[in-house]
Image (cartoon, rainbow, N blue to C red):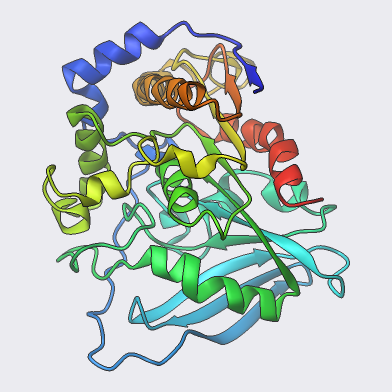
Amino acid sequence: MHRRVLAVAGTALAVSLLGSGLAGAQPLPGTGSSDGGGAVPGMQAQSQPMASARIDRVDMLTDRRAAVWVESPAMGRTIQVQVLLPAAQAMSRPTLYMLDGVSAGKESDYKESTWTQKTDIVDFFADKQVNVVLPVGGSSSYYTDWNVPDPVLGVNKWETFLTSELPPLIDARFSGNGTNAISGVSMGAQAAMDLITRHPDLYTGVAGLSGCYDNSQTNFKDAVRATVATNGGNASNMWGENTDPKWVEHDPSRNAEALRGKDVYISVGTGLPGPYELGPGGSGVESALMGGPLEAAALYCTTVFDTRLRALDIPATTVYRPYGIHGWPYWQDDLRESWPTLERALGL
């Protein structure tokens, strides 16, 4: 069991924030999961959906980056995913799925993932023999299958799309070898952990950056509801009222036994300003005031999940940064820190 506890200061602050309800407050702009990701309303489910998902078209944005348009029967519409490709494209390789925060591409009007807008992910993976799949869209969806369509957010059947419809298409079109791992940031971190615990046969490893992984506490449910409400959605349409069994079914902490034998990485900051706020050319105190409370809450969530994994004696690489708000510059660093874990999971 490998845990790098760089700092634990700030837990009391996070507990206070959660207790006072600030962690469940409306997320603030400009900080990843707090970006106001607008809705991309889905079409109503078709009465006679297509028999199976299919690739409608592939637009090669560069020789190493593809925009793939997938007709999804589950979603009742065409979904874009972008795929970063290795240099040796004739060779088979594993696939890494990377999930966004709540904005899920809003910054580009849903033309690309926030990962490619806010980080150097394209350059980082340029020398790695792996397909990197970046879904575009899914604001406030938690990348899950909703109980019913939402009046604002439309039809969301992301779990079916990501775990059943998409992987065979990616493997067939881009020489995937059937080995998959998943990573996510903020909302996407919780979603990634949820998907691997629900589909342990599909993924060999997971990385969660600044996420919450427990739905048992009312404050945690409130935080999920606030994230969904950021874009006008209602989480009761997702997993029902707080007593609905769906909240337990999608609780990575309570379903953590499924992580046994997986390569697991989790990281989080304290919410305190760091070099990207206070250093030369930093974004300043204002951004720290926006992203700090969110990261402090994520710190508490991560501590709870880490404690759960320890109790189950499930190995994980856990990194507590001694500073850092809820923002993309830190997640770009976390991408590098998480890669050895994901690389091992992918068999590279």
